[in-house]
Length: 69
Image 1 (tube, helix red, strand yellow):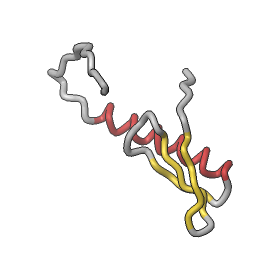
Image 2 (cartoon, helix red, strand yellow):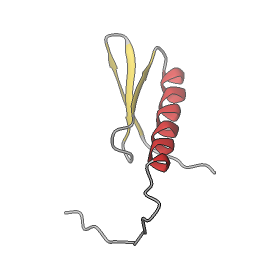
Image 3 (cartoon, rainbow, N blue to C red):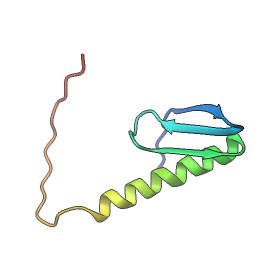
Image 4 (cartoon, rainbow, N blue to C red):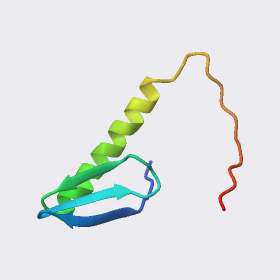
């Protein structure tokens, strides 16, 4: 499955640094833009793996609406 996200990036001390706008907490860096893109994908996968590892066996889900001003 593929999902598309917005990579926001900037230069910092000669490194490309970036984050996924839609996924708070997913940041990475690379010496090139291509390396940053690969590293941010890896960071996203690690975040997903960690979330799945911490699911409580008795947890349930429910769709909720969140209103944003």
